[in-house]
Image (cartoon, rainbow over all chains, first blue to last red; front, side, top):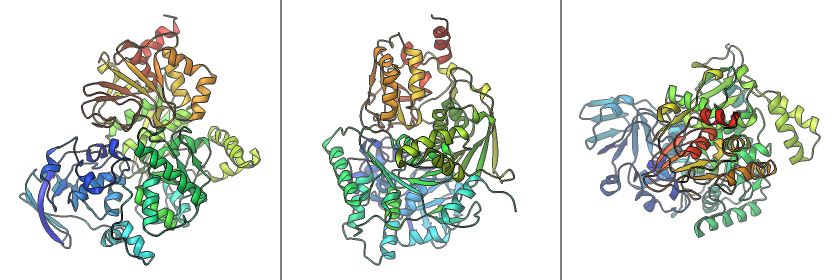
Length: 173
Length: 439
């Protein structure tokens, strides 16, 4: 898969409370509504302007803090399919994979991508192309890649039990 | 072949393999699977996917703690759904609203033992390292998968060894140790790692103080924490296991001790840190990151509006007792509001029995129902925009407690109490000095 999107660049330690505030975690269950609160305490323009295919870029320790999956679901519902960072907090990395959002650990690209520029991701060639150049990112381990290929943990679980994902399935966000 | 770390030994056991090495991906079968108020959302999805029975309900532990008693109709519905699910599935290890915060309750009930693996839909599941278990946080979907299959993949982490020596001076706590480590190495200093605490410094630490360490290491980015379990740990857990199971105390103690795992002397560590507890001083994490750590003397005098003592990190008896030591017979500053929330009903009962609760309330504290309280901004003490908070909790991220315009300082409970007394950030050693001399 290859696509181009606008880069939304934030710094180090982007935490789950700014990705999706804790006060909403037991009251908002609809992904579209989650998307309306994505990054609201860090960058209110994000929800107003984000387009499907846009790419969020962080520094070190992206997604630190809570285990809440809404911090991934809110971005996914806003159309984000990949996040580039120098490093990811471990639960956030798992949650991203489990919800079919590609976490790309690439410190070189994360350091040079400018806020608002157009970035192209090629998942087959495993490259990121931005104004500063093209960067290659490492493959995921096969068992982790298998979850992403299935579309996430829930679709993989359904495959394993030989049943389809229900059409209006509500993730446990 | 080099020796093994605790993480390598614990995950070899949990995956049923003779040995595993850092970097390997393994399928593990956890001894305990934790969820809390988020159980309702997981149960809805579980049913929607057509699953009817949890694979092994005996392995589940569920607590109501994140918003108790429920502040809204939505939260109340959530709890009602969880009660129905617990009854349908025959889940025995269920703890009602008011029993306490999940990590404290599971510890008190001896539902996790040395050498075991617990996975929980809560980032502070690192907590169980205090007793020498492997505890790691996972997502809600992963708990769903665990209910359906009983297994989950984990990457065996590389390890950091932390050697402790000496004893803590008065007014300095293991919260200060944790903030110091995070301040020294950064909030991502332990990312993906197992952080393993060893050394004679551990032996002098109370159980409550040890819990704070493993719990707070979540803010260091670690996968799990580990503190070498000693006799004190076995002696704390054994009567609790005996009480819960009705079994013989000596048998319980033997079983607990037999499960304990210790890293090999020649285990491979990526990094070794060393701290002399006697050289530590009170510190605070300044807004808005946990690694923005400074000696308390540098920010002393900063006016505060609101002080909070509680959470799974620092809401235990020792924490309330330290606060009472500072506040007994005194009143908090008139412009400050102080909220104290015990981590569990057991802590609350004991605080009442020892007169600690009375002292805190007489000093002007509002005493809350055991649970998570305002830690993640749900209820029971949300700061107003512009207010300055000093908290014994674990996160000071912008908006964490509900208002993005509030500023949160993190500190030990004794430092929070001293600051509530003076109405400004205060080195607890100053106040303790006046207590000791009767001033």
